[in-house]
Length: 487
Image 1: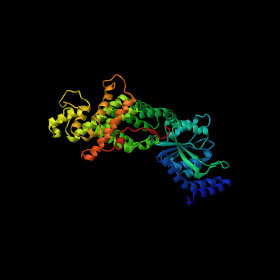
Image 2 (image 1 turned 120 degrees about the horizontal axis):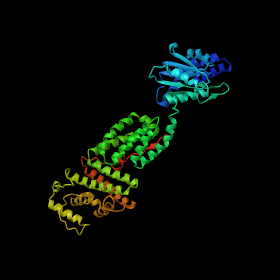
Image 3 (image 1 turned 135 degrees about the vertical axis):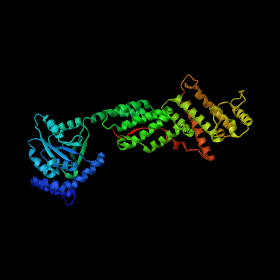
Image 4 (image 1 turned 30 degrees about the horizontal axis):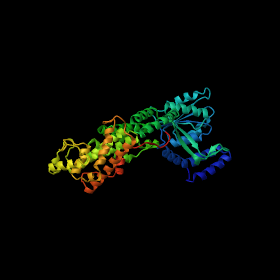
């Protein structure tokens, strides 16, 4: 057993035995003194690097002319069953391996193979695999032996999807043909048949991310799904497939379906969060807030709908879809003015307005409405309150009710920007809206929204959940994806 000395000091003693050509004593010193100090370090490094325990039911180890690698692998994994594959030239080391590996004789097996034909190693591997019960978790360790033997086992492990272990090092002593023990570490080698697939899907993932970040969620959904079908670790791509679908539904105002999907997606993200973070940066706290927003939207809560109109408009404007952006900024204004009226009378409905809810003489409201509207529409002859209220009439009613938002925002400005919406090909126009016009209606919607926020805070309306635009942005503005490293 080790006496607890530092590995570097033990290494010096080990080197003296090697330099004296005392191979047997050096091996015994390595196995009994150095290895007990080295194994906890190797196992800790393995757990931190690969996020899993180095535990397997069975181990198949390739024996070369240095039995210490097989012994170290066996002590590292501590399998229930060990099978050593070897040539007739290395058969003489089996007793040494059994002596130091810590495996009972009844659980220790070996299979011989010939270097010629070079496919004979596969026959030995097949025989070795039959030594393990069905369903056993198996690893192949191929540090020993020749490179051709290790290459053959690597291919076989890829076909069989068996984990591959390799005892590597950072410092080598060529004069002794040994690595320094303290520089050793155990690699979990990626499946050689799956890794190239992941490398080729890198371009697909990047394309999918690019489409996602410009709002082409239908395209990104398809690309992420296709990539996930060919990846060894598809979790990040699967999550992005569903996130694309979620935003596609949200973008289409299918709030109920999007809200239902968000719950199952959140559970999947929590389950595979560590795997996702390997590939992508993902703001879990922000996604939680977005799920809350979807819940409010699915219930039709009026303030959430207002915020959603605004940030949807921003999204379409950023993606150079000016006509849709202009319509959504118009809907934002409608929502702001409608909410302002509901703040005065909760049950007021702009589609079938009951003007008596404001507890003001209807004739007075009517006169003030006509007077306020006449500031711009001087030639209009209709002299009664509308039977339904659009954006402009809602604003005029707010003016008649002396609402402060009608004092902060001029009627002429609202009328001018309403004309922008009417020029859209989605309304009454025949040409696309230009960027300047979209910017103009965006500025009005932003100003009106900020005034509404200030007014509701001053009036301390109890049922309002009003915060600044920046506070609401993380709840309603769709996230962008960032690749953390090469896929």
